[in-house]
Image 1 (tube, rainbow, N blue to C red):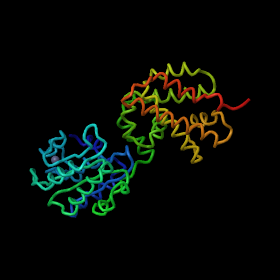
Image 2 (cartoon, protein in one colour):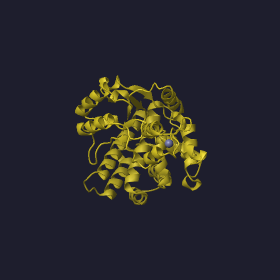
Image 3 (cartoon, rainbow, N blue to C red):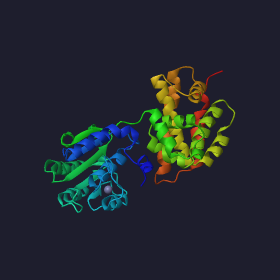
Amino acid sequence: MTLLDNASRPPWPWQKAAWRRLYEQKQSGSMAHAYLFFGDRGTGRMDFAREFANLILCVDPADDQACYQCRSCRAGGAGHHPDLLLVLPEEGKKDIGVGQIRELTEFLSLNSFSGQGRVAIVPRAERLTLSASNALLKTLEEPADKAVLLLAGFSPGSLLPTIRSRCQLLSLPGPDPETATAWLRERLADNEYESDDQLRELLEAYGNRPLELAPVVRAGQTSGFIALRQMLLDLLEERVGVLQCAREAAKIGESAVFEHLVRVSTILIRGLVKGDLRGAEYRALAESLPEQNEIGRLYILLEFHRQAVTARKLLAGPGNPNPQLLLESIFRLWRKPELRRAG
Ligand SMILES: [Zn+2]
């Protein structure tokens, strides 16, 4: 590992202050037995927790970073560290069950193989069932020696107050738009996006969550998003028809299209509600909507958003919906004649 590689590992730039706080606790031997990291989705909570586990287990850390060279780091990097347990909902299930928490409790009670301690991570703590939460509470009341539990979730409110009160809470802020854009730019090849403005637009569409956006850009979906936003405007201004739009959109991929439509409508709705719709393209879209006043525009957008969310769910579900019909239906709604401005 070179120094350069440090920049491509968590903590991400917007998490540095929180990281420093934890590192100082580790250095002074005042670490808590349990932490709850909370913050927005797509800003790297999970990366943060994993990296902190690496640091705890590293035999020879370099300042506040795991060394990535010792045996412990190599095992952790490969996901096979005997002192590290990651607890996620089991395949096909939404929740984390009580059986998994019993395993976690047993895991934390055993002696460390490496001598550095044992770490269990529950990255989606809001998925704990009530009985799993109660089982976890017992573990928190009688923490094992040199055992650390790292929970991560949206907000402290998504957990039982009794669990919350036994954890040290650490808020993980998301990035500001400039930091997020710079971070993305560093990680993307030049040919993966066209301009900084485009990146900023997409970031906004993705609620300023660079970790969610990066794979979309890498999958070549940037141009699909931009093309679709333009399609919506062309439809409103009657430059293209519904069927043509549906055909063109199908080339982007139906699932991606509905994801994009959800994002575009979210930006428009958020912008109208807050009264600060940014980006000339979005203002043009909002102004082309067939309603003179904002309430009317919001009404159309909310209906459109609802249908895009439903279609996205249908396409991901076990049924076998006709994607072409879904596309035609949503574009037809966008130009629904009775919603259009009279005269
Ligand atoms: Zn190491």
